[in-house]
Length: 306
Image (cartoon, rainbow, N blue to C red):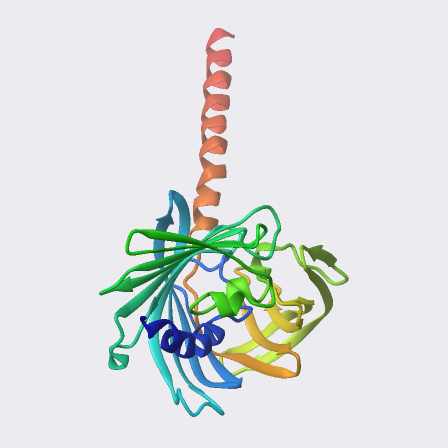
């Protein structure tokens, strides 16, 4: 019997947890780079780079490269994580695909994990997820969350497994955070003071507008409280400070699950000026220019006719 799923689970649980934080990305233009300092269970830096556009299963998405260099505090097995992975987000900030690299020093038959998600409406958990362990031996797990069904495919065979929220992590070699913690990208919502709305299992509430000082600068931010439950029923709460102005992004956050906190604050921010404003200006100037030319021609003809 292959033993790599056990080691993979021990490896990727802290890795995916360090990645899965409430960072808004859908607003960020290509060329943006944000670096966060993490404290709490995981201590270190995490950098997001928006590298361009791509597609996942025919769906257009924004390709974001995420580099994590952290220490998993209190872990005797995994002293540090230093890896780069790629995520592709749709226009609502939901991840459509992830590629996680497994560090070669672990000498596993798996060198990367590819994850593809499918979403419906405003649901905060994907209704379908495909997890592929890729390398010398290939195994896939198709997770149908609403049906409570996992289809495992390996070596030409197919096995169907039933699960509940409480035993999902026991059936899979590791559980992606998008299947355990509810997900919502705040940059895709029109926030304002007093805003309050439910998104599936999550409740979002804007508390106030505050100035937040970080090493990257001073930012006017909405203080947003996100509460809900994880897939296995544990209480979830995030306090997120997200910029008031566009492009909207996270400046500081505190995530708490049953008393275990993880925080992150912005160290550096590089956001190129959007070309959209210039394009929009030309969009309006061209018809105005043509209208002015037409007006002058008509006026000139009238004078000749007179």
